[in-house]
Length: 268
Image 1 (tube, helix red, strand yellow):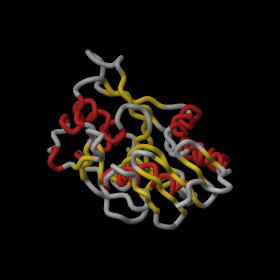
Image 2 (image 1 turned 180 degrees about the horizontal axis):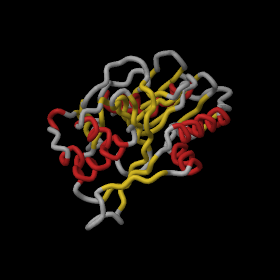
Image 3 (image 1 turned 90 degrees about the horizontal axis):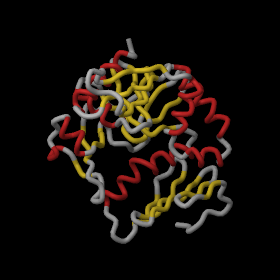
Image 4 (image 1 turned 45 degrees about the vertical axis):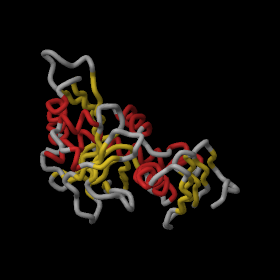
């Protein structure tokens, strides 16, 4: 495995990339040589274990491979509700928490962490190699949702989050995009306020929010895909009229349930 990539178009502390290959380095986990449409080569760091490597594969490595293969992807989670996809991205409201709540209400989980969006018409799918139906949750959320920790698996030794299998969608064709939501917690809600509220987002603001949630945006730009990226962001932002979902602090199960109801309502 090379220590540096000759002719790299992008160089940053973690990533070097050309149009077809990339080198991802995280000293505590290892080095990953990523090539479009090829198996990833791993040089595991001393002290790292399989869970550390798998965590990278499920997130930054999967997204980096998508970028090299011409796919755009977002940080977030996606579920299928009656044949259409609801994608939750960005914010600190808990995209995985919302996906888990919707799965417990009957939705099927498409992806968590890395969500691919593209095609004509727009559709949603999980990156290659993703484990179907897995959702990663922090302790406060899985306790609030009454999930059994014994049914979940630790992501990494250094992280207290657990991964749960919830309503996996069978592999198959991409799911038509139905809604995009931007969830976050809002301390101003509470008391007599609703548990959650939904607000329309202007297209320019939606484009900004989506770009903030995009995986490896600097890499995409340096690889000369900036114009295609902008067109993709505008298409997503205008196709389904994203909404910002604000939920109150506290009563996690109650506020997530109301947020899930609002997200489902966007499909009607």
